[in-house]
Length: 198
Image (tube, rainbow, N blue to C red; front, side, top):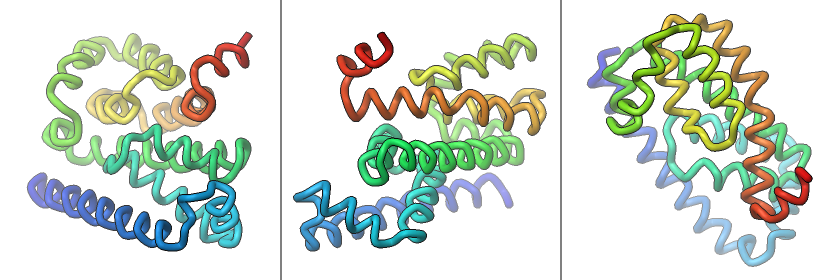
């Protein structure tokens, strides 16, 4: 698959995802689900298997082709499924999406990376790639913290010599903390988060 074809495919997925989310939102609105969070939780709860699978798929797509700000889907997972299950589904979706993103970057290289992240972000982190050992440490730390642009860094990592195995282990081990803290911050605000940590 050429870079041009992959760009078209990414644009098509983004467009379909965008219209799919709008259609789903209109459907939920007509059902009156958005008027009451308990009604929304009950609706999702009725789809015992389909609900979580659909949400994980949305999270995977959200990482690969951002449709909404990532924080919205993180908070939605906790609101819909509760703190524990919401965290698990968020974690699974984001980890799988991150690995797919890395694989795509490794397959199609710099042209695809520059297509998916803006030039300013690329230029900000390109100096990290000068030293592989330093990059691995900085990458692991950035993935652990909830403030770094994880998706962009996963793409940048694909341009380095980091092995697929090492990348995957960093994602699996470092992601839980950032997903947990970011979800808490979005749901309860920074004041609650500070109280929780102290």
